Length: 253
Image (cartoon, rainbow, N blue to C red; front, side, top):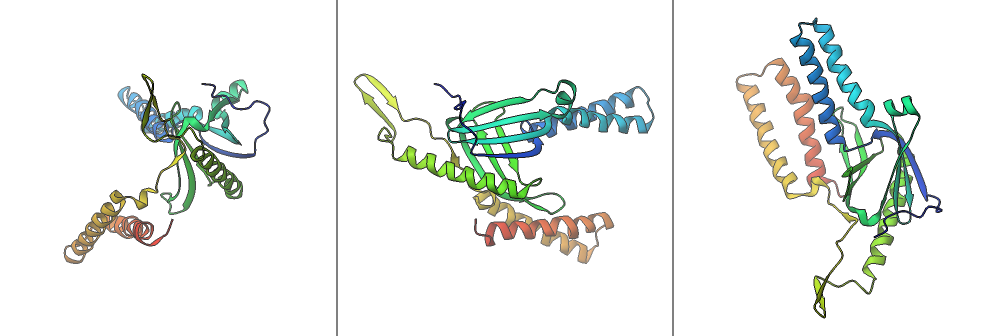
């Protein structure tokens, strides 16, 4: 099957930002492991504490230098292309990376909102791919207006692709048999996943967190919490639970 994009077609819309070139979760994990490994090495050889801290920060920055960079997302009628400039490799060789995916290689996507640790809400589109890098995260934190244009165009393309797929006369539910050969229905793609906050798990977790918060408040009223734990309760836990209640039971997506 030819999965290449039309070479002569101009992109419908482009969106440039800084972000993870590969799976963000694995990149963060690798950065943490790399930084901790360098820190432990310096501790084992008896280096001063500031050298260990430099090793920790240096290891994290080194991994991020290869996993993070400038990304240009280019939307086409038949797929998406990523032009990437990893910070360290591009600084050394000035070469861009390029990856293209046709829509049939995007098994599903999610369009949702969430909050950072500092309490700022951000919007994102997450593509789940059938091949490496597995996931693509497109976030509005750098350029909100550019993201909005990209988002609207992407959702329109998804709607067009879905309607054309639904109208295809070759679409047959399940599997059918032609002579002695069984022909299976093509695997669905570009399926929109629901927001986590609208799942049953989110509802159960919200109820659990509310009970935990009430328990901690009662403990503080009767026995008192340490200053650190009280700060966490008032500044992190309670606002986070309030946000979950809002997203799960109040906000209409």
